Image 1 (tube, rainbow, N blue to C red):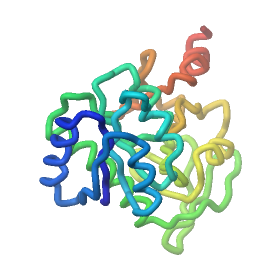
Image 2 (cartoon, one colour):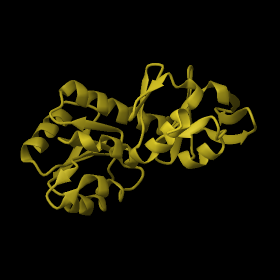
Image 3 (cartoon, rainbow, N blue to C red):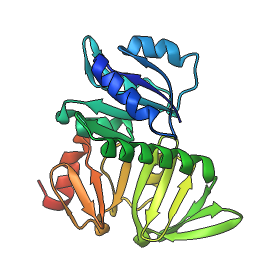
Image 4 (cartoon, rainbow, N blue to C red):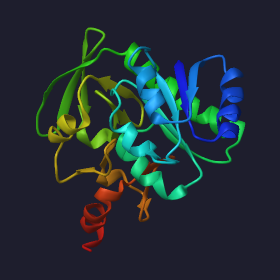
Length: 233
């Protein structure tokens, strides 16, 4: 994956450069101290992934992320934990809180590589839906997916991944369109990137849903409606 770094701190840029250099799946194209420099570079160079700081002098990584091509993946790297929920509203792959370990960095990279692989490998198409299931076409077969079997739907830019306990189905559709095809009384939009099956939720707190071995963030703008659904707040 072709990547760049945007961070106003020289030591932070150097640390990321070393981590990227040790990872055979990443190719560092360049690093920048401001989003303005990076924006000019992105106009001329195809880039798959950006390691992006959030709070920089006269600069805001969250706002910059909203201007990027939807095909570019983002991993935020920041010293400020309070932006975590908001970062997922930009469909970020991950949120690394400084100082982070090489192991945590590797986990974030794995997520980015996995997402890119899903989009490049699967060319499934949405075919139809009714009151109880949807049909996805994949590899010349039509797959019948019952709503009751869906754990959650994950948005990957212009694609969605439908997660069941046993399988994943990737299809070219944005998450808003997919949400409209699911029963509204059962499937809740909880962030810009996730729709969850309310019946599959084991527990939750103010900002996180716990489902099987999965944790799903609840976006800041969705928290009130989500808690009202369960608690009547």
